[in-house]
Image 1 (cartoon, rainbow, N blue to C red):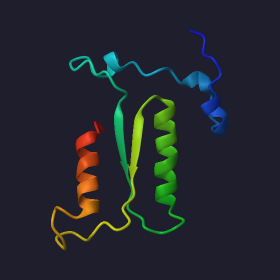
Image 2 (image 1 turned 180 degrees about the vertical axis):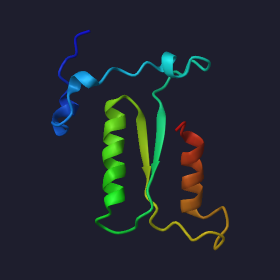
Image 3 (image 1 turned 90 degrees about the horizontal axis):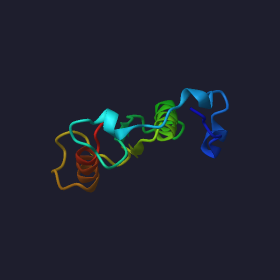
Length: 104
């Protein structure tokens, strides 16, 4: 198999592009025969401006996208504390929608 140089790999110089293979949805989801890329939701909990858990989440998202996944990262800012508001709060609804959307 010949792998062509992917311009998206320019920001991951420490990773050998030969280690990446295209994602085969039929192999990942043989029973469902998914017609879309795998959907991944990434969560982190820190609210600090320079959050290392957010940095790690963003890096994981970049790697998953390189593997062919569709990635969304939930920003927890403005998410209310547990049991302080109803399920109609915008951030609660956003998180619920993302959890429904994702497959992993």
